[in-house]
Image (cartoon, rainbow, N blue to C red; front, side, top):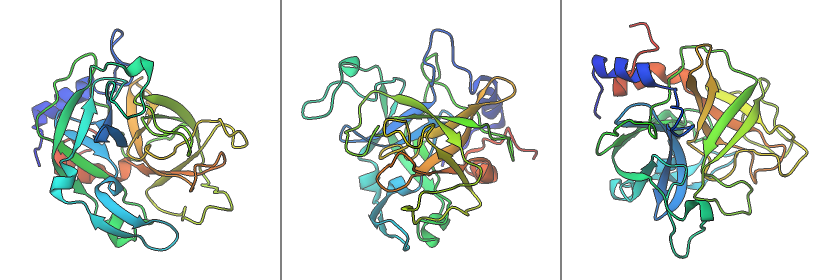
Length: 285
């Protein structure tokens, strides 16, 4: 996997988490597509690297209270996916797909995937014990501009704000189809990870953050759903920069209004990210 130099890492740190006035508000958000359909989201952390979830590169035949059954996708299957970068519309019009007037055309650029490294502990723990994160390496480096920038990595053990922003191309509701237009929504940080009675998945996982919709009794209240996995969970730090506090992992089955979203904490894996990518600017080395 390509590693950035110290000089490149410092350059990334100088521009990360800052949207330009005439640019996109969330220039680090990406959609990973398969045959024109959003599968998972991700966040740009360098010209070469996208941070996302591990489970997006597995074929899960079961996922629930019992350990999962799975197959690791082949490199050919993974390379059928492309990373959509640089536009709030992850693609333009496609026949026989869900389309919107806002996304009849798109300025997105598509990057092929060169390699993926994900945390093997995700599999060893039966897909239900955390470690749901991965680094995607692109086949060509991204050129940063007002439409495309990296998000900042957090410092170790950051303060977590009460409200968290999620940027995604996933479904708004379980029975609706996802749109090619990006959606942005806020969820409330739940420090106690209180799940609904119907939710049989664990909550006491060291690398979990938890979040709930702003109104758990309102079916239209925004929350994570299918296709939101991998999407960046962000907050603004004390310097006014946007930092990637977490990666959307999964929520309660069926995306109910009172669901509990599980989010992989990024700060837990800063040393691993540094080792794999060379992006170490929030660590004392």
